[in-house]
Length: 308
Length: 305
Image (cartoon, rainbow over all chains, first blue to last red; front, side):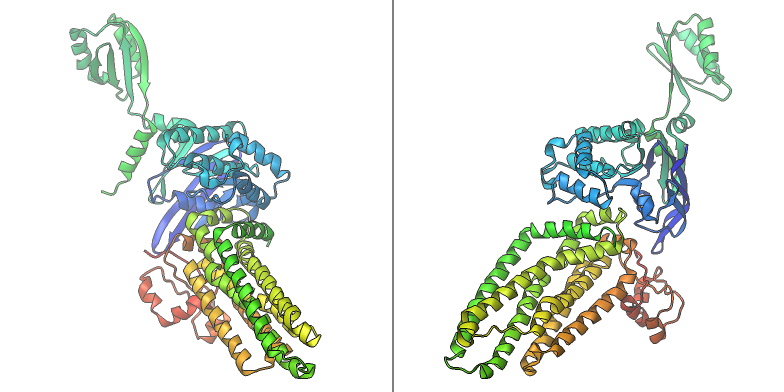
């Protein structure tokens, strides 16, 4: 699968401060890529470089094979920036029409109707943006990003400042774009829950450096705390619990009403624990492995990155 | 410049539909009515019955010259002094400028498109105001008294073509500064240069009596427009998307020379880079750097914390 975005050693210095320090990652076509990091980490600077708004001090950035400084690269990209960039005194149709003309969209009227329908704003098409709620504005900004049918969407925290129901709407629009419209999505966000729900790959940036990068599920597995919970049909008797506790290689951590929690030790496999319990006459209801949430991965990474 | 007409069309629509524009139209409307009535009364008193055309012609041409030159100038200046960089300031503050620059539009297309969008409504208002006042003067006073229509060709050219070119050059300079620095600086430049222009033209009108209806005056205006245009064109070399973005974020702007230029040579500025990234304030005070800030493109902006 070819790459939608590639950054190779991109650095950006502003004043005396290095905002980006040799950032490298790639986004494959078809990805919903989450770009995470705390405030001031360099997320927006990366996006500005990708959109040709800032020039990298060093390194190379390409979008769909084109250097980001070329107009051709920007024709293939739709975007939502931190500020929605909509004109309050224009209607939704006028806002989209303006960008459709800039991108040279043929048959703009039909395209605008279709996109407004996709984001659920077809009934507010002729209303001025000044009357829109924050969630509606963000959905319209997403529509504007789609108006020229780009291959790649770069979204800078599109659900920021939106209420929970608005966030769900925005998330649904993004998923529609990814799945129905088959777009590659580069999503910068503070909303870890949102990223965890919709992204398949992520990069985590902190202080201008990429700290974590890869498949989200794999990263969660790698960073999981290796906890296994085994549910039983009956409560575990005290003698058996004491015996299991004495076997330190099992890593038994706690007993609840009808469950045991093990922290897997090196060399211990889940089937070994299960077969041991079965041999002791325990009936097993279920086995579940606890994976680290993105929030835990994120917090752990930031803690590791803290200066001593 | 591809895409410039799209920016122009959109921005003209926004400006014309705004409340601020309506207020300016009302002010200028009052100005036109006042000028037309006042001048007509003055002419009717001066144009005594039986006054020979040969005797009246030089004074009427001067009068017409003053009116035809001041009307568009006052209209354009009133508009510019209140409005010239307001749309840029709003777009920078609210964010549309960043979205616009993230499209395939070039920074120059945005600059020229926005300059024309600010200029054209003012030009049309100035044109209408001048035509109305000239027609009222002629049909209400001059034509009945002398049987002649007074509006010589140099005045027509100056009022309808050259003065607007001069004003467009000024607006484009103001918009350029608004884009790459702070809109307040752009507005200040427009007002400052505009006041100087009014003063200079006022001096011409008062001291060189017949100049206003001459080709010489038209050429002076053209020379002024060319000078401002050259300055704007020269400084536009420092226009870049990065510079607009950084200035719209309210970043401190330092400027540095990245290669020698004719100004650099003239000022004996070394070809080496002045890097303001460290200890910028002290470097800012460095005499040559202050010259560099205005004169030497390409310049590079950076945020200094």
